[in-house]
Length: 478
Ligand SMILES: *Cc1c(COP(=O)(O)O)cnc(C)c1O
Image (cartoon, rainbow, N blue to C red; front, side, top):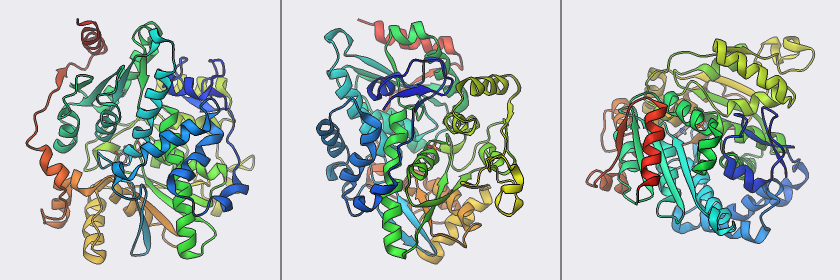
């Protein structure tokens, strides 16, 4: 498989290079040249163990890593020793299904992709010429990417990781999950700004190609294609499982969304031919994406802090990948749109229902794209969802999952809905207590242990130059 940039200005590259490049050198995102059609193979894949399915789903996207080596990496990634059980188990909860993606080491779905990415980095570096076997990861996190990425690469040879989190805006547990890792190759930065500031500084530093190449910068945010790729797998495994449980021909997924990475993986799965009839996109009060899918206009607002901090994002980086397909994979056109957006903070795209436009939309409603239904959950909706789900079904949702649940309930009649549970509730005990009045529902021994561990991080100004100097100092110190 060859990869190109959404902005059309890099030469096609292979999978390994796409993984190492992170953000495309022209400022766009790396995308596969084609989306493989695997419709005819879904039946054969039924019942495969997760690891074997992962190998099948990923193979058409890889190409330059021998299949046996991919198999080995995938098996190490999803080993029961890492997961203590299945990677992506499904629970029936009331009228819906919950896909529990929080059984990895840092208890958020991001482990599923970042554990694999750590193995991919190590593998690709080890096969390089001896002078080029080092990389420095630069990451921005709204809470969960940081700890999952750190966990994926801590202690690995030749890899340093720098993680910026918005100071005081991630939960105390999320902060500790990052800063209580004291390996020499882990560098935590508390930035005096929002997540969007962290992400902007990251993109600006990646955009300085001299700096990027000199210090071999790599990305673990979902701008990295391998993240999206690893997440496509569980849409296939779960769709098949729920088909079997319900006898339905197709299923829907409700996805709590921040950076549009996870839901984009679902969209790729759908386009590849997984039996998915639609995606329900859920945001919190930072509803730029929900508004887009209801109105066709993408317009920036202020970031608000909510109970679901990993979704407190306005500028969803992966949305650019989706827009690329919406403009017919026309990099020049997308480059123009992104320029316009950078200037005005707004952009619009034509209705996705084809040449007939809005009149072809189901029910004549402009949903912008018939593949998506969308909604935003307010704080009160999230608290209600957590409380009711617990009292009716005895099941505790974390506040991110609760956004998906609350929005999904509005779309209930129709194909079965699978809500992605993106974090373990024990990561967000304050929200659970606020919703239920109980402090004993969201506990986990791994989290309890964190609170007594030592931590390390450096507070930096909301300034690209300060971050740059910090990185240089750390890397150049004797
Ligand atoms: C990152 C994250 C999300 C949002 O995922 P995106 O891929 O950024 O849309 C949702 N829930 C939790 C718990 C997360 O950590």
